[in-house]
Amino acid sequence: MKTLHVVGYKNSGKTTLITHWITLLQEWGFEVAVLKHHGHGGLPELPPAHTDTMQFLAAGAVSTVVAGGGMIQLMQQKERSFQELKALAASNRPDVLLIEGYKQEIGEKIVLIRNEEDREQLQTLRGVLHVARTETLFSDNTALDDWLWRWMEEVI
Image (cartoon, rainbow, N blue to C red):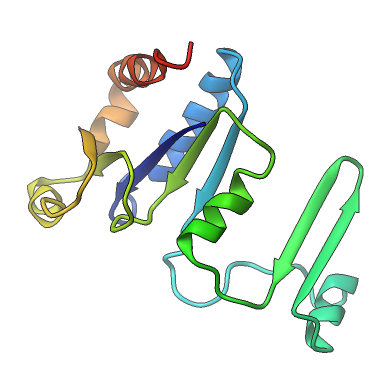
C-alpha cells in the first residue's frame, strides 16, 4: 500500500486535491482509502441525536458499529494513535492511502502552500517529496496529476 500525506494550512486545497486524486486513482484502477485529521477543533460532525448510534453512545457505549447496504459506520469514544488510525483506514487493503493532515507524523508528503509565509512555516516537515502552490490546483492541476503518476509508477 502506497501512503501519501497531503498537508498544508487551512484552505490550502488539501480536500480539493485529495477528492480529485481519488477519482483519478480509481480511473487508473487503484482502490483508495483516506485518513483525515479533523483540525477544526471539537468533534467531527456526528449523526443526528435521534439515531440509534447516538443513543447508544449517549448511554455510555464506547463503540458502535452499524452495517448495512455494503457500508460500515464505526463510531468510537476514544482517542487513537496515528498508527492505529492508519491501520483502521487501511483495513480494506487499499492500494493507496491518502492522509489529509498529520503534518508532524512520519511519512511521504506533498505540501500545499498558499504563499511564501506557508513555505517558511512548513520548512521543518520531514518526508516532503513535493511542494505545490494552491493556485496550481485551480489553474492547472495537470502537473500535480503527472507528479502523482510518477509517484505511483513503482506500484504499476
